[in-house]
Amino acid sequence: MPTNRTRLTLEQAFRRRLLQAAGTVPFWSLQAAAQGTAGGGVLRVAAPHNPSTLDPMTGRSGPDHVYLYTLFDTLIDWEPNALTPTPGLAESWSYPDPTTLVLNLRKGVKFHDGGPLDAEAVKANLDWGRSNERSSVKVDLSSVESVEVRGSHTVALKLKRPDRALPLILSDRAGMMRSPKAVRDLAAGHDRNPVGTGAFKFVSWADRDQVVVTRNPDYWKRDIGNLDGIVFKVISEPQTALRSVVSNDNHFTYYVPPQQRAVAERSGRLTIDVSPSLQLGMLYFNYGRGPMKDVRVRRAVNHAIDRAAYVKATAGGLGEPADMALPKAHWAHAPELAGFYKHDPERARALLREAGLTSGVEIHLIAWNDQLSMQRTEVLMEMLKQVNIRLKVTTGTGVDTAGQFFGKQEGDMHLSFWTGRPDPSLTYDLLFAEGSFFNAGRGATAGMAQVLTEAQAGATLEARKAAFAKVQRLALDNALFCPLMFDVQMVVHSNRLRGYRPNLIGKPKLDSISQA
Image (cartoon, rainbow, N blue to C red; front, side):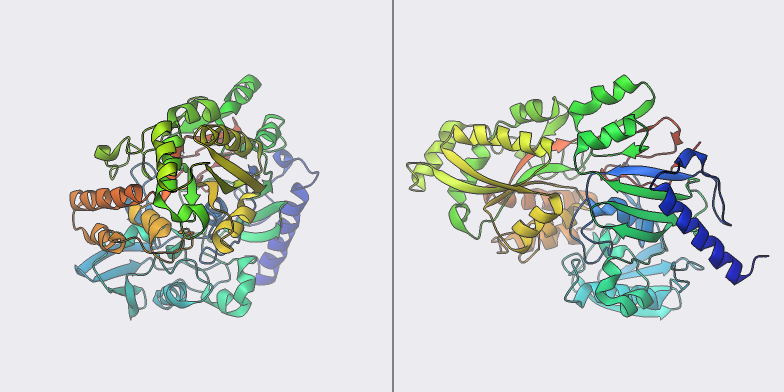
């Protein structure tokens, strides 16, 4: 049996091997060299986005999830297609009364630093998420009054109000458990040196270049793939990312634009996976400043957009025109609100005249600077020009523009996307609740808090669906945003990969992948 010193030496050797592999050593030739490796080699992923942080409770960028899923388990998991809750770090859960959620934790799970995943660790995480000034999940946990330890592996969440959405909320960032010791010892440094319980352990992060993770030999799940590690190469231009997979420099890429499907097909040796997604391309509005303060201007923008033409022009027809924040296939979609904002340029011009903007208006749009986003910006500019809305455009990376628009509250509109959440209440809370980070206007919409609470408290799916219809009507009537299109999720990878499972969230989970 190897000694602890031997194990450490082997792990260090494997880490060096991973870093070598990110450079010139061919991945396919690598052999398992350390105890606990599975022999599947290292997966090279062309990742379109640099992380904003690798701490789930301080980040706000949707694309971070692909990195986070490798490092962190959640208290509760979800079924990939239906998004129904399934056991995770919590083997089971129950509501003994409407305002108490009890979690029964899995025993024997350890953090990557060796600390136990127990009730005290869960309480420390949830209390930090609810109260720490750096937390980005306060809205997610707003219904939690207190967290009680009721045994070594039993936790009770006492709620301010009934909240049936909470199990699926705990399958997202708020339920990603971090080592309390690492968070305490590293403080803000944990953002760049994460310690979770996931299938992979953190090795390194070179900003805007690559993130490296290595297999966790002590992982509690046994039904995972055979990868020894993953190197995420940050390639912000989707076309360049795809070309790197075509040339076998990388093995897997995601968020592939539909227009690039033909490029992948021509290679003849790649697998193309196209699946539905909650990912919503949209215009975020800062209704707390400038021309967007006037609801008539916000409604005019919505009426100016020909969504069917937008899908055809920017996605080759692969996508669903968006009437609201949920697609038609989702259980909480409200079909009675379809076509709420029909394409009606004359109505848009009339609304601007009613707002006293007889000569039109200039709106400051912040957009991403990749090729596809620039194309979509140009299409929007032309549509809005037809109703006398002129766009002043500034561009940057996804992380940078999010910081500008939501953090510094610069700009009037932001062309970006919403990546979806397991439970709709979290989507609507984060987008429209007063003070939420993604509510750039930060203000309260009359009646919104009440219907959001109603949607969370519903004891049945039908009750919740009816409440969500009210939420959606309020958001549309007040023109709090401009939904454009639901993207399909296109993943392209080497034929040598097996076991990838798409999910409706549209953010790949990689722990199921095996490599021949």
